[in-house]
Picture 1 (cartoon, rainbow, N blue to C red):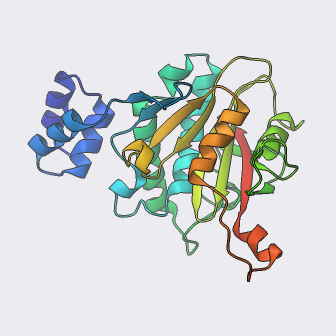
Picture 2: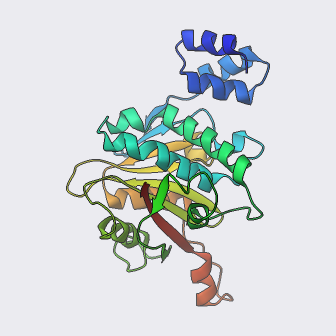
Length: 267
């Protein structure tokens, strides 16, 4: 990658990570790379309610040929970058920003390329117990919790609903409740990262998603939610209940709509 092109783009006001990401997307064409950054949407947007704020990257995991199956690696990379900085109280918006998203995607895709196995969509638990680069830097807290996305209206109250599972992870005695908690959530075949704030501290819940979604202009994004209920509503936008019809058994419906939550911390 041409360092002169990177420095020129930095001098124009773009971050070094955004410049590198644009040049990766348009190799050998610095003008197109620059135009892509000028044409990109604002990094921070609000949803229709004005409650949740969203920050965007310039890329998603699909920006790279080998990124399609890298979402678990990206989520773990994001946890590894974000948890230490959040612990230093550097300000949520100063930590979870466009640079954070871009670096998480780049690190995750790179880690996937270096460590990928025969398992196309590896789970967080598998990676933390394998010879991956995450084994020495991240640790599993408690056990992997399983829940079910339901057609019921209140996912925060159902015993196996998303809100209840996230609350269990936060209150697990194996985690330090005065610290930020990272949760890797997988609804096969997709994985996202969730940051849960310390107990009794007024900080947002954060959803980090490396997949291209229509509501994020098809870029990786992070959404800041003011409550657990608001976080659950955001997650339901991407992991909604799927009705398989009357000919499918209740057990099969439950399995299809199931998800895993893995709470992790830095070593």
